[in-house]
Image (cartoon, rainbow, N blue to C red; front, side, top):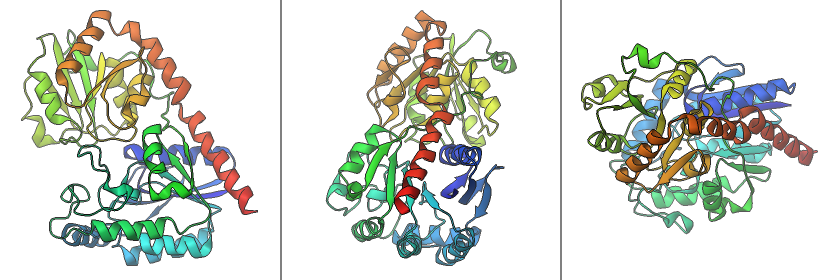
Length: 404
């Protein structure tokens, strides 16, 4: 079995790590694994293929910012990439995020259609079913169920500051994305599956495979984080993001900091250098951590993980925290509540920081130890990557058998 995965990144950020984990399972099963990526990459056990260069991506960015043509740039780099596909001759092509300024969806899908290559498509966001945005939850927009127009999030990712092509983009995507015959779609949460059923992609089989994490890496462990940062006697409220924005809940953390007692501290991982100095005194800012073992140390040291995300599909940070024995408090956003149950965390409505504080204090009063083993057990049962990613191997086999 020869599988080519395509994503905006490789073994970095959530989708890149998921692709890497799936690649490892492909190799374990005796197959060949390739990961084609657009922008960022770490070392990989799979064979890496870079799509395009900075010039291609910069021009794609300009097309997006001015003309709202995200997904329609990168023509030259996509043509070159298809020549590499021809050499690899994959049995399966597995799509992840095909947005991110690096690939041309017209050229890619025309190639997939003419070659009739079986496709698995994992939906990590809602971009495929809208005329513009990757998430519509925050603005409660459901125009995509019929047609997109006058996008209320035109200046949000992938931002366009001049034209609004959401109407044309919607119908172009619909035409391209429904043109293939051999496709199986994977939703990473029941939440996004329900939206996909209401979209033009409902002609395909849609199944749920939860994101998985390395439970051998993210585990309950002794951590020296409190000693390292001089916060030995503090109750730690942890937040983790690759990029802290309003959508990820940065303002909510700042608001929360005003109501904490002196025995509590917020630790935010992923802040830019310039942002750290602007944080309140009771917020410890840490820049992005690329070493997963160090990240696991923070999860293990934390007393609670708070995820005030306003738009998300199924955040892996929740899973990593659980696997390290740390209870999770999350907004009722996307598939995020599906990661926990009543014994491993709490769900609050978006923006209700005061309710979040109530649950933080409940965890403080009960103590992390009363949650720890149940959190770990839930992670092992539902979110272990070996178990979850093996489901992709079975899915590949189904498609190959159908091909024969």
